[in-house]
Every structure is written in C-alpha cells, then in structure tokens.
Image 1 (tube, rainbow, N blue to C red):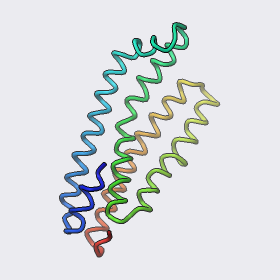
Image 2 (cartoon, rainbow, N blue to C red):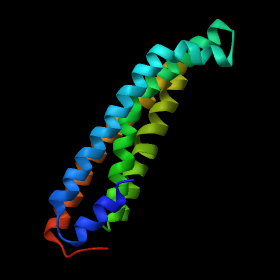
Image 3 (tube, rainbow, N blue to C red):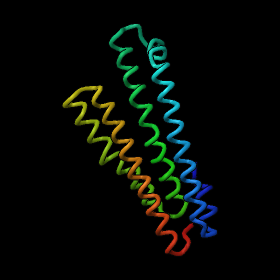
Length: 155
C-alpha cells in the first residue's frame, strides 16, 4: 500500500517524496513479478503436478503460471498508482486506472482472444492488458502528481 507514503508528503507539498516512493514501489512490484516469473518457470511443472496427473491439464496450468506471473508487474504498478491517486485526493483517477484496465483492456482482449484463438491466447491477452494497463497507470499517476504541484492541497 502506497497510500500513507503519498498522503503524508502531499500534505506537506512534497511531491518529490511521493515520486520517490512511487518509483520504489514500482520497482518492488516489477522485481517481485520477475521473481515470481522465475519461480513459475522453474516450479510450474511441480505445482501443476499437485493439481492433476493429466498431461494436457498440467500443460495448461504451467502455461498459465508462466505467462500470468510475468504480467503481475504491470498489475502491481496499477494497484500502487491507484492507491497513490486515492491518497492525494484524486480518487476518480484511481478508479479510472482500474476501470481502464478492466473495461477497456482486460475484458475485451481476453474475450476476443479466447473466442478467436483459444485459451493460451487468452493468457497472453491477460499479460498484454496488465502490462499496457501498468504503462497507462504509470503515466497517469505522474500526470496527477503534476496537477498536485500546481493545485491547492487535497486530502
């Protein structure tokens, strides 16, 4: 949760501290996703074997774990950015970040991919929506902070 780190410095008009906290939180989120991706790549077959002995099922589980783990970095950026927007008084931006990811990216991309290309393509669509959503969130949160620098303090 990045809210407390954003809320305190914003009331003191220290957007530089908020930017530093965000960069650290974003770095952690992406680093954690990289670690999870490595673990999923190495341990995916073991985890899949805990759920089924069927080769087709375990292959699907391994594919899911390996693709989705990579996407968690983007999703982490989304969560942190939305929390920061909420903390500095721009809750509509925070809600907009989640809505953009869900309604404009995740649902249409995964639905289309599943219908047209199958389950594995749906996993790739989830990855794309999380990474693209993370990039959008990254941009928007720094845009919001720019507004905080030029507008009265909001709490």
